[in-house]
Each structure stands twice: as structure tokens, then as C-alpha cells.
Amino acid sequence: MLALSRLPGIGEKTATRLTFFLLHAAPEIAKELAAALGDVHERVRLCSVCCTMTEPDPCRLCADPRRDDRIVCVVESVPSQLAIERTGEFRGRYHVLHGVLSPLDGIGPEDLHLRELMVRVAAGLDEIIVATNPSVEGEATALYIQRLARPFGVKVTRIASGVPIGSDLEYADQVTLARALSGRREL
Image (tube, one colour):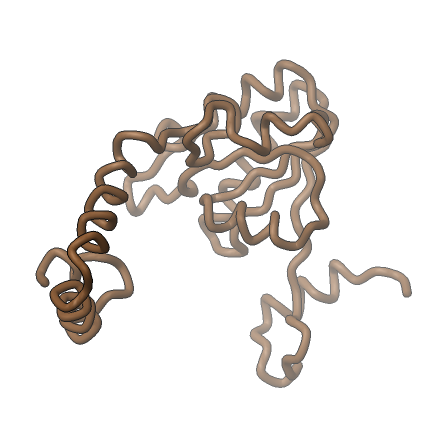
């Protein structure tokens, strides 16, 4: 039970519920789960191109010939990549940093997959879309990427941010409203 409670989002009650489920389930279910957990560390690795988590190398997105090789969307994490991919709007390539610059937490450029990104930039890109979170660290990372790419003449853009659909302006913070105003577009 203690091992299950170490998983993110799993508290003591959920760990207890899962433990009792496994105790009452067919032994094959527990064995299948144990095997799957063991396989994670043995079979999943970083894609040699975009640094996402994958079993095949390159990953299925990097291997897809229908995607645009000239545009790369840079994200903080694999869940961010999956969120963008679920929209069905982006048909370029990805690059996963596995974090953002955060000097206070001891995370510098050498701790991110920026070296691999620069190999891709040097090979020739038209655009880098920086899709890091709109936080101080995400903004610092975006600016750092812009500085790295500048000598290569690559266009660096930032995803838009602003007021979410369905929210009320009166509850939005000042930074969000300022971003929404500066990023406005013609109807």
C-alpha cells in the first residue's frame, strides 16, 4: 500500500482502495500490472529526435512523413505535447525540454534538452513555436531559446495567451488581461 501512495495524485485512501482491489482481483491482473510497471523502465526511452517518451525510436510523430519538418513546437513536458497534439491543429514537429529554466531550483540550460534542439535548428528550421507555460520560468526559457536561435535566422514565436473561454473578465488577473489585449487579433 505504501508503494501505491508514492504515486502522484494517489493519497492514502486511494492507495488503500487500489490495494484491496488488487487483493480481491484475479492474480493475473496483479501480475499484468507488475509486468507493465517493470516494462516502463526497460522499454520506454527518449526519442532521439524530439526527446519525448517513446518505445519505438524515433517516436511515431517524428516518423510520420506527413508532418512539417520546418516547424518545431517546443514544450516543457510530454503532457504538454499531448495536450497540443489532442487539438489536431498542429502538424509540425515537437521538441520536449523536460523542464524550464529555474535558477532558484538549480535548473539551468544544461539540465534541459536544449542541445538537441540546437542540432535541429542548425539543420534548418523555418519556425520555432515556444509553447512553455506562461510563468516566469516559461517566459525566461522562451527568451533563452530566442537568443539561441537568433544567429540561425529562425523565426521564434510564442503561443498566444489570454482570457480563457467561458471565464469572466472581472476575475482575470492583470497579467492575463494585459496579454489578452496585446495579443488581440482582427475579427
